Length: 315
Image (cartoon, rainbow, N blue to C red; front, side, top):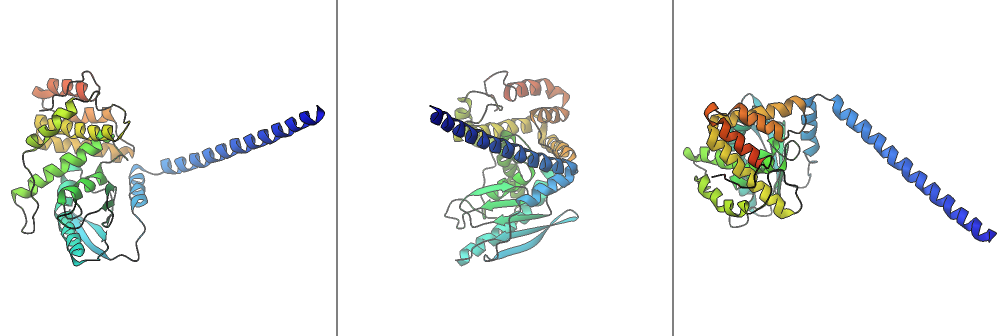
């Protein structure tokens, strides 16, 4: 009996010892986290934004060829570096095409969405078979025109560039993904009014017609823009709802006010360095909504952002 009791004491002692180690490790981690957070908050909003840019710029790839140029945005030069694997001449050609699209589109996106591109450089990794964008960093795949869209598709390129301004780092998913879809459409419409000689991209100028295609299946979904994400289908639906929402705002307040609304939101972000929320978005929209449209706009915002109703009436 005494032997069993001693064994039990030993097991209990070991258990308590391990528990103490786990607790100490937990609090040590938390202290480190707190130190890191305090460092982050000791920076100014602009320094925090720049920090995010450089955290997202990937380490230089020494083995892959790169195309390096400067893009003028007003008085500021943006260093654009595109890395690619040039196994075939066509890959190099498509990367160079992508740079042309970047040089013509980036200044327009900047003038429309914000007053200043957020990063001093933009890095594009062009060999990946996927696409993503964050401040100053784009990964984009696909080289040949007959393949899935890639760096020589200006719409996809502008979608990812838009995420340098608006992404999950500074706005709700529906707003960042909705912007990533809606803004490229607007930019391409502007370019196609007077396209450069090298422009070979074809895009439908009838956004209402395009959006009506996704309207029915989006209407069938329950919830509002704040519905939690559970799976990939929810993510896609929220992206669709976001662009339909922005399309409606654009139609109600007009392009000039729409651009001012974006710049106001970006000013809030750069002033605080923190993520904007739905309340910020609502206030910025109403700030630039004409008086004769305000009641309609308030009803629409209550319906779509705050979920007063579950009846999507975008177009």
